[in-house]
Length: 357
Image 1: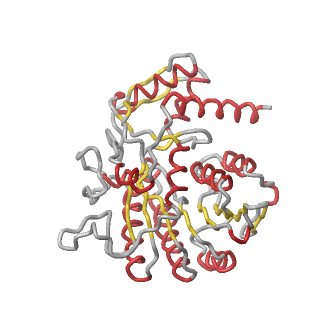
Image 2: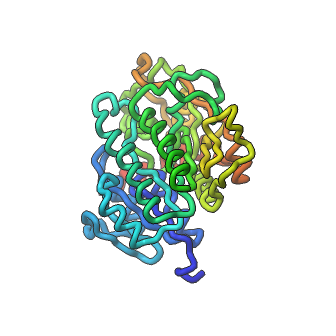
Image 3: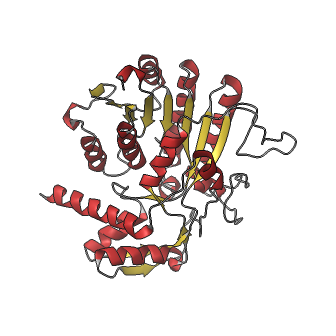
């Protein structure tokens, strides 16, 4: 395919976990990819640099607002709060699609650093919307979160459930993103799809996530904490299945006047505007202790668990009804838990060997 005929995608947060995997998949599928990341120090930047190296970039060449190109992929270190330079990037690159994965992540971090969520997740997302307004794209796909369901115990969570009771600033900022995207779909006809992610795991995963924390502790023969005395479940979803879903979604932008929307009985996931919300998960909740048992089996050793009470801002269970997305993109997650955990462990051990060599 001639490079001029390839669709061009901006991935914000490309040095991140999901962004890295999405970039690799899109490159294999003849897209041109431009990645953006501010490479902040919320977690070890060396992992972010390792992901960028894996994508073919020389990290010594990275500097702020400098576009590095390598074949069909490019990278720029840029903060989403920098509207002038973000708009300039949109003007120069003329994107077909935007996938906004850049965000300040983490529930517990928001208890001590709430302002970072407003800067990255609200101001940053507003700047993405403004850039899409100035330089229109065919489809904006943006990361929301399962955490928007908050206090709801109406399980499995469906997209039209109430999401008015977030438990932390992270969830509140993601709920705000959904409403902001709808307003821009209404005012400026920006086709937008929000994805409520459910506990994504897999190789190159973040060090603040449970699987990384548990694996590190078990490899080093150390104790680790499990909250709510282990009585928790999550809709663990393998990252390869997540990015395959996003790839299939890109060319399927929502249209105006969705006949499934009834303005007399409005629902939050559909609209008369070019806007939609999907859950994106595995549709199969797994008990946290079974997740740990799968890890123990892969590593061949028992974990030294310290049981703790529930943490503020956390929820006992997540379970996604994802039939809407399955039907829309004709794809269901297919990676079983043990295979996914093994893939994570193999990459974790490889990266540790490289770090210590």
